[in-house]
Length: 207
Ligand SMILES: C[C@@]1(CC(=O)O)C2=NC(=C\c3[nH]c(c(CCC(=O)O)c3CC(=O)O)Cc3[nH]c(c(CC(=O)O)c3CCC(=O)O)/C=C3\N/C(=C\2)[C@@H](CCC(=O)O)[C@]3(C)CC(=O)O)/[C@H]1CCC(=O)O
Ligand SMILES: NC(=O)c1ccc[n+]([C@@H]2O[C@H](COP(=O)([O-])OP(=O)(O)OC[C@H]3O[C@@H](n4cnc5c(N)ncnc54)[C@H](O)[C@@H]3O)[C@@H](O)[C@H]2O)c1
Image (tube, rainbow, N blue to C red; front, side, top):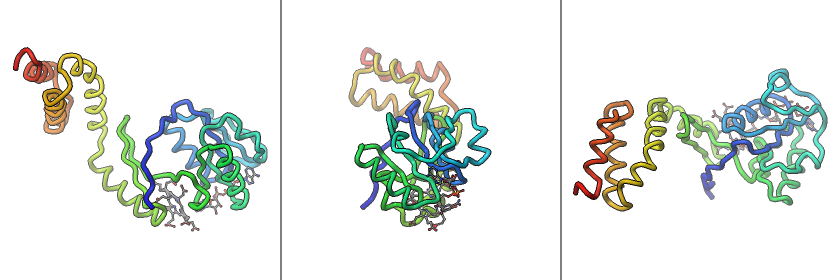
């Protein structure tokens, strides 16, 4: 059964990462990429984790109390039984949990993703082939550019104004469509005069 791609807000979310090796380092980078507040618990921490001021590092073995107040957990130790035990504890507490490379113990899995600003494309193969997910990510990298993210930011910034000036329905949809097309064709954000022209065209008074 395929996994549902639920895009979750992680900004400021207290997340627990158990383990301090190469795999934990990669997962920490991903969680930080989405603004999570990551606590790392492990008796041994690689230097990159230890020196990262954005992380809260606790040099000690995992303890059940480490789960308190956490909204997401990643079990990334080299002990599969421990990773499974942590997953079980999380399930009892309804905390989403990933046990690295142990799909059967995960309540969520990590996707291969491309992120530009707030635009995110993410792939999973449902655990069948992480390499296939990586391959699809590489394809998307070619057209998910920083310019596209800038266009998305612009379209977000003018959204309230468009909504205020054009009532919901066909005209509003066409206005958003026109602005997107303009951006995609010119590879830049529409100029103020271009925005005004689109708004004027689709405003009720001028139709
Ligand atoms: C996408 C990515 C995200 C990330 O890690 O952030 C990710 N794995 C990545 C890479 C990767 N992982 C592996 C290889 C070696 C090639 C190979 O084995 O195929 C490579 C390639 C490489 O290393 O280049 C080995 C591997 N992975 C899993 C198993 C267990 C098994 O198969 O049973 C084994 C065998 C271990 C063994 O040998 O025993 C399991 C999982 N790995 C997942 C995610 C979840 C399913 C994602 C999906 O649906 O596809 C899942 C289920 C759980 C999880 O960990 O979340 C990341 C790419 C990041 C990027 O580039 O953006
Ligand atoms: N590194 C890879 O490329 C890779 C690839 C595929 C799979 N894996 C698997 O992922 C897992 C982690 O890999 P790694 O390379 O990060 O391993 P690692 O040996 O570098 O790190 C394991 C970490 O787990 C920590 N740990 C052990 N017991 C703990 C406990 N009780 N509480 C908290 N932390 C504890 C250790 O201190 C260590 O920091 C392994 O099971 C490995 O087989 C790794």
